[in-house]
Length: 221
Length: 199
Image (cartoon, rainbow over all chains, first blue to last red; front, side, top):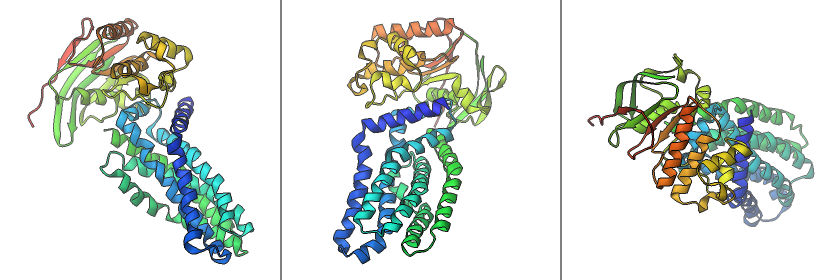
């Protein structure tokens, strides 16, 4: 467990040193979402209705941005071998990476999503539900992204392959996340959708690090 | 004691070596020699548990070493031909994952990098990066050191320091397996000569 937190601390320290890379995902999220009012027009009835979809799709794409370098830098400079020999199982190395990705990308997206939803004229009663859905949603995105990044590691043009692999897997998260916010703005209970999101998160928590660990081992061979 | 029985490894479609058997006793050293492509690095990665052997067994004190990879990893230090130095971290921060304050100071002293401890690692020269990678070996004791060309790019004084590190490690009962083309101050090491297999 000490090694796990030492690895997490190292990852976070590296992210803060490369803060421009870290901020890029957040800025992409804000800018991409800010384009929609310009493209669709600022009418509250249209914009407010599709706001949950905008926030979710932009968060999903923004979370993909840093995945390319998640293991890529470690593979190139030989650190990956040392991480696999650190005494942690490969799946725990992947879990630490996923947690670092969530803390550095998922949490800032979560914080920025509230003001963004207000800007997109989302109904007030739907905003807490949107954020509540994004909480397990961003965790699942980090986990799926980590598994995808580990699987395409070492492949040529892995950066192109990665979204093709990860985006279809994120479809359920997107569907239930947007459905929860839509239900809340329509006066229905968002509870079933949020529970399904939590179930997806509970399934991804053990499975994705295992898959990512296997990917890391085969990339090191 | 580390013992290999009939090890074989493939790289892609090519058989790199087969039927390789040797033993390294406590305090012993094994020097791997052979032309480029003869499988020295492959053998080191296999001993580290990064590669699975196609045939044969790797034994640690008589038990299968690769059955439990994390605990096998805990008893070895691997120095690959890449330095694994993060340019964004300082020299001392690069070592922090593997050890605490005092251990870092001693390890940096052993490779004469202590006065550069707070410098970002991107400012280091190639030889200094190599020395930083070597400092990782000295951070925490582990019985088995696997070294791939440890002295590549080092000056004479640094090679002598590596020799002192190796001697101290072996004096404490540690084992060393090292692949190199360069002369290395390593006393009475057994030599294993690998031959390049035909394509």
